[in-house]
Amino acid sequence: MAPPGGIALAGLTQETRMTKHVYVAALCGAIMLGAHGVAAAQSAQSAPKPDPADSAASITKLNSEDRGFLTRAAESGYLEVDGSKLALKKSQNAKVKQFAQKMVDDHTRVGQQLQALAKQKGFETPKEPSLVQSAKLKALDLRSDGFDEAYSDEIGVAAHEDAVELFDKATKESNDPDLKRFAADTLPALKRHLQEARALQKAIKGQGQAK
Image 1 (cartoon, rainbow, N blue to C red):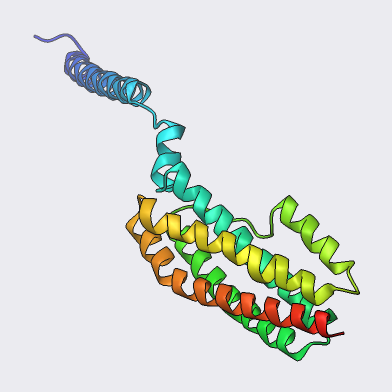
Image 2: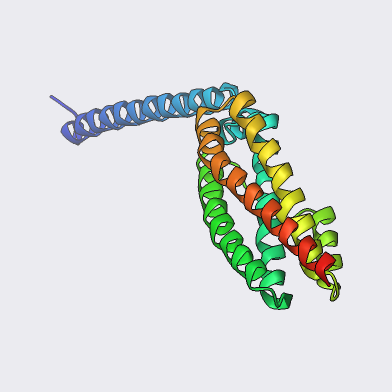
């Protein structure tokens, strides 16, 4: 005969065994999850991190020569626009004002195209003339007598000679096909500006000699 409470004891033993099985299964699951987490962490730590230099290279798609072209072209454009705005303000010569307005319009448009192209290539162009060009503009602004002649010499002729040389070089030596195309498309207008500037310069000097 089974002792009193034997059935209850057997049930308790069976329940205890089940509890142990559940505990062991849960413990094994936790160990497996922990091991998986450690492996994932180790994999993340061992994964190669991106090189900042590689990231910068992927953003900026131009070599140093082409970045230099964009920089100097932008600064040249600001020189033309700012110098011509001075002419619109200070000159009393109708021909000078007409030429200056054309320079403001044309170089503003080219400057916008230049900025859009530079942005496409991941490069930010300057937002003002260079320090040397800014000094020239300040000196030009201080002129009263002889302003028209100085403007035609420095902004009309000299600045366009530099721009033509800069863009002509880019059409031959740029490594970026988009920059080369932009330079080639812009160059004819710069050459026309230079011809017009030389004609204006000659006219102004002729007026000075006639006085």
